Image (tube, rainbow, N blue to C red; front, side, top):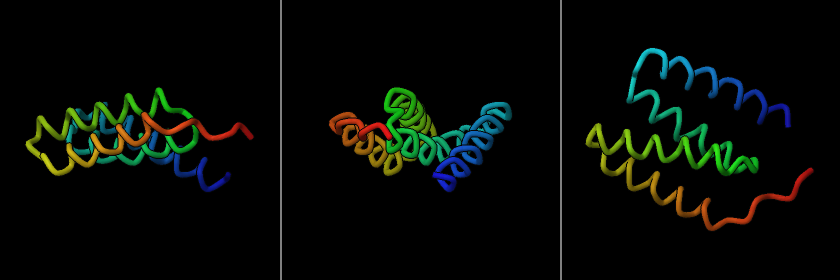
Length: 86
């Protein structure tokens, strides 16, 4: 649990900094990891929103492989039941 929380804190801080700086590449790359972590921990709505933002950013950057991979993650998490609450 501690490692998940540390990872979330670090990714969340990095994501916020990239948003403030307007770095679309950073937003997309960090958002990819942050979105997956949120989805895996049961925060599907927020995680899927961040993943969708990353996917759209990858498309804007012309990074089609990243966009396709992110779309696959969105589909996978959208079909997945939430984890049992602890």
